[in-house]
Length: 158
Image 1: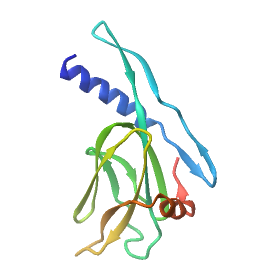
Image 2: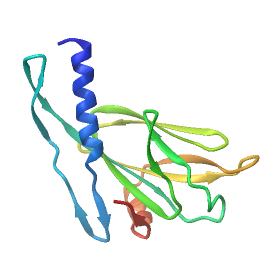
Image 3: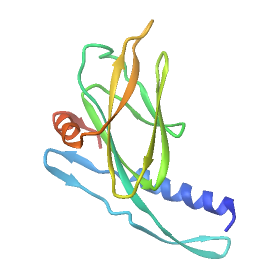
Image 4: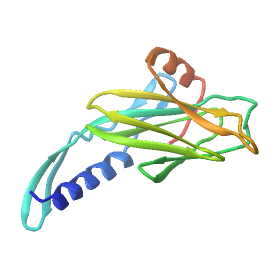
C-alpha cells in the first residue's frame, strides 16, 4: 500500500474520531463507539480500517490571572477549542498516534501526547505570567483521580 493511501486512511480515521466526543456531566457519561470503520474504498481497492481510540481531556480551572484571555488550543496545527476559564472538553482520538498540541498568546507552549488505544489522558491548562499578557502552559496529569475531581466542578463543552 502506498504512503499516500496510508496517509489518506489515517486522515479519514482521525477526522472521524475527532468529530466524535464524550460529554461528561456529573456521573453521566455518553460514549460513542468508533472501533471499526468498515470498507473504505480507495482506487478500487477495498481496505478495512480498524480504528482504536484514546480520550484526551483538557481543562482550565478558574484563576484570577488571565481570567479574560481565551487562547486557542491547536492540535497538529489546527484550532480545535477556544479555552475558557472554568471549562473542560474531551476529545476521542484515533490511537496509536502522536498528537502535537499548542497554545499561543505572547509565547507558545507545546505538548506532545503519544495516544495509546484505550487510554485516557488529562491535561490541565493554566496561565503563566507574561510580559504584556499571560502565557499558558500544559500539565499532563499523572494522577487521573485528582484530574477527575478537578474536572467535576467545571462546566463541560459539547
